[in-house]
Image (cartoon, rainbow, N blue to C red; front, side):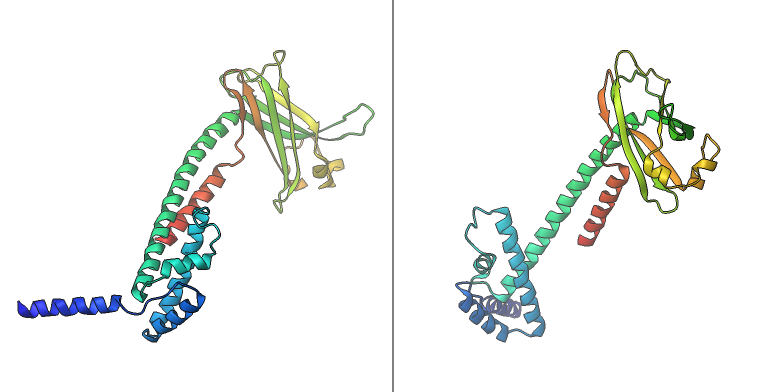
Length: 285
């Protein structure tokens, strides 16, 4: 029993001695350098490296403190805040402080990123719901024909689109269509245009009725190919012309639901952001 007591006391004395070793002074730059040099005399190479890392981490802590509480630290530099943090601390206390900060900072980042994922998941569900609604004004046919804009104009390619109202209610009010035309070979966007208008009480698009779009093919798309003169219309295969044509509604209006606008961010955006955040969380753990 006596031996156990002696060992315990010896352990406490050694621990106390270690804790009461050289400390860093944060009084000023000169005192800091002098006290740091004295501390390093008692440290081996690995400990000196750990001390340098810990001091750099404490500067990051100081930056974060000032960023989060600018009024509290008004007029104080990052170095001054760092000095106040380390003043009077031993080597072990500095290391522990830096480790505690890193752990707390990591946990905070994980919490924030997790909350961001939850928010993105909710926004994604909203975007999916709205997209499903607006996609009910469905593109059902697409082709290129030949026509004239004015009677004395030469014939030129016209883009023909048919949208079907698959809603269970009438479409009335503002609408907007968007047309994107890409190069099939490169995927490059060649031409893009939005066209819209308003369906008033005199023109209501009822369920299962079609809306036909017939306008000149966008200029850059026409210029992209030299095969139009020998083309056989109507054209439904755009591959020989190196074209991919996509058209969709970005805005529609129903009497009951009001105006519905396509979300600027689609599902792929949300999935990519959520994946990135999950990878960042994994790296932090």
